[in-house]
Image (cartoon, rainbow, N blue to C red):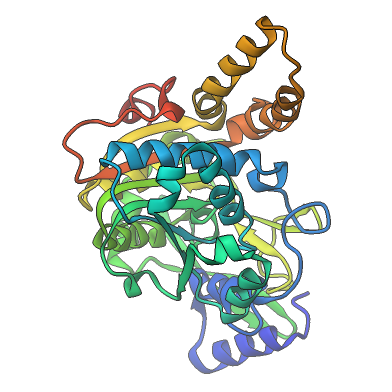
Length: 386
C-alpha cells in the first residue's frame, strides 16, 4: 500500500489532474520533493542508525585517500590558486569534512589554494551541513543551489553515489518492442502502466541496448546522467571529474539474465523492490550504466582518463602509504598508524564487499597530456573496460 502521507496526497492529486506520469517524475518527488521527499527529511540515512552504508561510513580514510587524489590533480593542473572542488550530493557533509581535514596534513600549499563548493538545492540540508562544520571547514566551504549558478572553475568535480540517485526511466521489453512504464493510481495504491515510448531521447537510448533474450524484461535508463555531465562541462573550465558509484559497463548492466533491472529501495538496512510503496520514506536507487555516462562525457568535451573498480583504485591510491608503513616496520618503529589504516582500507577494497561493487570514472577537460593519477595506476584502458 502507498500510505496516506502528504507526499502521497500530492502525487495522487497530480495524477488525478494530469493522468499517468513518467516514473522519473514520481522518483523525483519521492526523493527530492522540497518538503516531503526522502532526502529533504531530517532522518538519519547513512550508517548503523540509518538506511544504508557508504564508503564514507567506513571512516575518514576514504576522504583522506580522495584528498590525496585531489592534491595530485592540483599538481597536474600546475598548482593553481584557487583550485575549486565542487561536490554535489554531499548528504550530511562528512566527506567534505574528511577531505578538508586531510589535505592540510599532506600539503599545506595545496590547502591554501583550495576552495570547496557544495551544490545543495534543499535549504534544510544546507543548514544541517553548516551546523556540522567546524570553523576551519566553514572557512573553505560555500554553497549554491544549482550547478548552473556556478561560475566556470578550474579544479575538480567529485560525486560520491550521486548518479545512482538520479531519476530513471523504467522500460519493459515484451512482444518484440519496448514500452515505458508510467505511474497511475487506484484507491490507495500506485501501479505501473505500460505506454508507448514517446520521448525521442529515450528511443535513441533504447536503440543502443542489446535486445534481451529473455522476456518479459524490465530495466532502467538514466537520461538525467547525460544531462548532468553536460552541465558539469559548461561549469568546468579546466580540470577533472571523479565519479564514484556502483554500476556496470553497458553489456553487463543489460545482460539477459538481469530481467528485473537494478532498481532497489532501502530503509533501515532492508532491501525491497517496489518503489511505488511508501514514497518519501525510503531510498530509491539504480545502478549506473558507466558506458553510457562515459559516451555522454566524451560528447561534452571530456576525455575519459580512467575507469577502475574500487579494489584496484584503492590499491593504487593507498600504495604510497603501504610502502611507508613497510619501511617503518623494517626500521623497527612502532606502527599503530598502520593498524588504524589497514582495518578501513581492507573494508574499502575487499572484493567480496565494496571493492567490486563500486567503480571510479575519471574525466578530464583542458589537459594537454594524459594524466596519471595513482588511483588508476593499476587500471586497464578505460574504453576497453567500458
